[in-house]
Image (tube, rainbow over all chains, first blue to last red; front, side, top):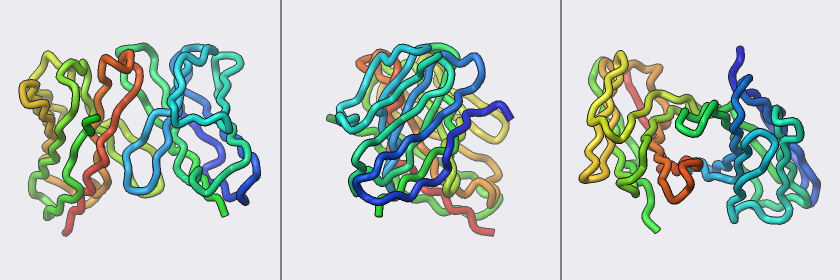
Length: 113
Length: 113
C-alpha cells in the first residue's frame, strides 16, 4: 500500500505531556499538509510544507505546536504541554503538485486525560 | 466569514439514489472536492470537479456544479449499505493561495437495507 501513512493511530496521554505524531506521505508527493478534526466538524488546516520548507501556519497552531519535515519526506507534528482542547483527530495529507488533489492518511486520534 | 454549508443528515434505502448538497463560499475556487469518511478512518477522495465544468460522472457518482449559486451536489446512484459514511465537500479558495482545503461540517449518510 503506497498511501499516506500515519503513526500512531491512537494516542492517549495525560494533560501536560508532550506528544509527537509522524506522517509518511505518498512517495514523490512534495506537498504535505496537517489538518485537525474535532468531533462533528470537518477538518481544519494547520500547516503546509513544500519539500522541507514550512510555507504556512494557521493561527490554530499555537506556540505549543511545532511541525517539521527535515528531509522533505516524512513529517512530524509535536504538541508540547498538551491541554484538554488538543483532543482531536490529526490528519495528514499529501499532493503531487499545486493543482493535484490532496490524499489523506487515516489520522492519529489524540485523547487527553 | 462564510462557512461551507452542508445538511447534517440524509437517510435513504438501499438501491435508491442519494443526493448530498453543498454551498461553498468562494466563486473563484478552482477545484471542488468530495471526500468520504468512515468511522475511525481518514478521508477518502471520492471525486473532484474543476470550476469550468458543470458536471462530472464517475461510475455511480455524479457531481453537479452551479457556479452562479456556488452550489455543489453529489449524486450516488444505486446506494449501497457500504456507502454509509460522512461525506465532506471542500473547496480551495484563492485567498488561501490555493493551498488549503476548506471543508463543510459533513453530511452523515445512512443507508438502510
